[in-house]
Image (cartoon, rainbow, N blue to C red):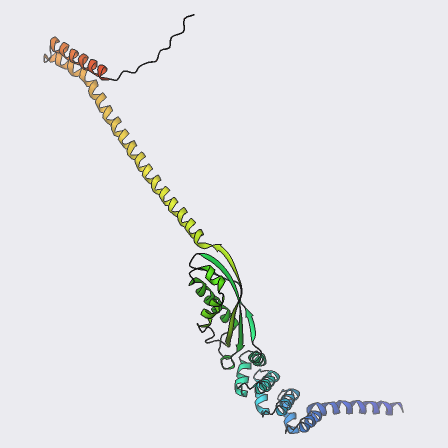
Length: 332
């Protein structure tokens, strides 16, 4: 009796497992849901999806959604997109949303955008509901040398045709920042920019900054402008300091050259003085030699001494006299 009970339990367990395997590989409930929703899909096709490792629930749900929205999608194309690594539900949502919003988007374009790594459903939503991108603070200098720091808000919507191969938000922000710098730099005065900030928006919009990007710029609005430093004055001060340093260097160079020339003249004068002293030292020897050889007499020698004495007296008389101040003590 006990063996009979165990056998019955084993048979029941095996039956349940077999039934679960049958229902897993033959999704009768899913097939019935497709038939009720108007999606013509065979039961064998669902079984083959299991063997191809494609979840039938994803494909059938997408087919039901597209059929109810009035779209005609092919299950084989959905399977191929899933096997290629695509997101079938996102593509289906995007196609339905695009149809409701009268946006021209076909299945081929949607799958290409999805496989390119972009969220096609989010792109369709952005086409319907534009997105606002805030730029980081952009610093520019007007012609009068005053620095301005501007922040802009860029309203963009997705360009479906440019999503494949088009540049992203970073390019938009870089181009808008470049346009802000260019427009502020072309202004004659920072006051005119502060009075009419829409001048920046007009100039930037005229440049066609959205060319080659995945977005279409709708508007550029200047959110905030702050006055920064006086760059012109800073540059002038730096230039003045540089000119001062150059002038000081040139003056120091001239002074050094003058000192070197003075030292050279002093050295030459000392050299000449040394030669004179050397020559004067040879005079007594020459006189003695002249006495020994009889070329100079005693009277000639006295005449020479008289001439020297007269010369010394004339030099003494010719020198200016310095008056010495004398103080007398008062008589007691």
